[in-house]
Image (cartoon, rainbow, N blue to C red):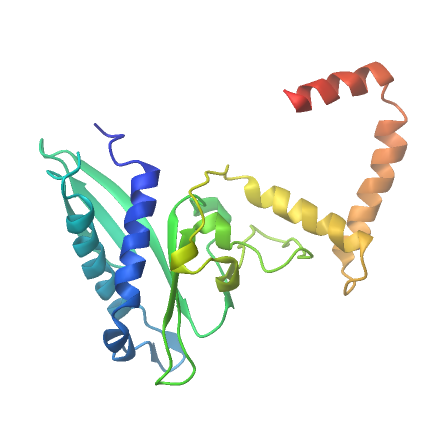
Length: 234
């Protein structure tokens, strides 16, 4: 029973929640988003939790989930699914809000990149529209194809523009937690093969390429290369 709340149904719930939040433009305009230099997401989280409960009650109707109740709490949307046998399952929908398209993300060590993310892009004009998008966390990771990797535990930035509008949302696609490593590897190679603002990391990557050619490729037999090629294709 612990697997009854699948990642896909949680993502569907997040999408429904995001749609409901998007319709609450008046409530979004009345939220106190900042106090001094501090960002306040408390009221946004409360609104999102309300929308999540309403979305679940609508979503579960006539399905195998109809006897499952939920309770939501802040910060973000922390969901407690209560099964008929009183078993409890905990899930989470991440919330982000900003007036900027690109913001700092969460530290990768404590991050589930397959969890749903709802991003509220706040307007600079008080009468503007609050844009709401929803995707899996990994869909929104990264700013461009030439990023430098960080000199501490990576904290991938979140990019609103990489998230699709709600009427054209990305399909559910699970990725491993190490997916961010592949992203930075591709960015590093893109940087050394194109004209970008120079970074010491570019010199490091070039040295890795050089040492790979001299110390690895030259000392690896054709038979070993064929074995590795076959393993990669499996």
